Length: 298
Picture 1 (cartoon, helix red, strand yellow):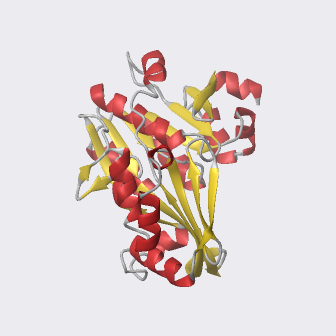
Picture 2 (cartoon, rainbow, N blue to C red; picture 1 turned 90 degrees about the horizontal axis):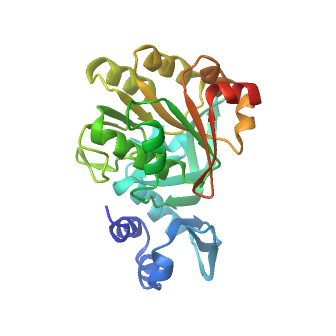
């Protein structure tokens, strides 16, 4: 999907006066927009791919603007979207994800509803075809290898993972676990991003169910999933490894040494689930370690 099409999909979420203003910005800005942020009673702001933040102080987001945008993000059915709302996001067409914050209602330490939405972060994904080719040639071209891709938020993990999935899906049976429709950007059952001709997409499945189903019924050689780290992930991803499937996954981490402070990730490393660990920073690979080297390091 082209960047222009993805931006147009994002603008459909916004009130007309915001959408018109953004659509008429210079191309050197619109081509770099990666986030559109709305905060009630505060300025609309943009984040660009070079991390520049542009606040439009003359444009204040009203409660009505927020209500309309949130309603569109959840397709005018907040009640049926409670699970996504409680997880803090809405999945929009073309792989767009809308982050949500507001006032939570909790029971037993678990969020059961969110009201008075006060901030929305419309994240605009990009296909950067070829960004993972060097890593693919080094580690995946001859046989699939399990890999963990670590990095801070906005370091380029999902973009890198999407391209690596495309390359794997060109020659290996590949399964993408796409809980938030960010990797394949599936619309009506069809991936709108290039994920490779041999790739099966499990769109919006809960991760545990998707992983176990994929391994059981699709016999993948490679399984791809984004943002791992929960205790539930450990058992299902170890099941993947025990089944002889290569796993490619991402996790939030500022440095490779920080992985030792993430008990679920460090367990996966200690159990030999991953062969190689990459660190991304500023949308580039900054460090590469084998799992064994990393365990010695941390």
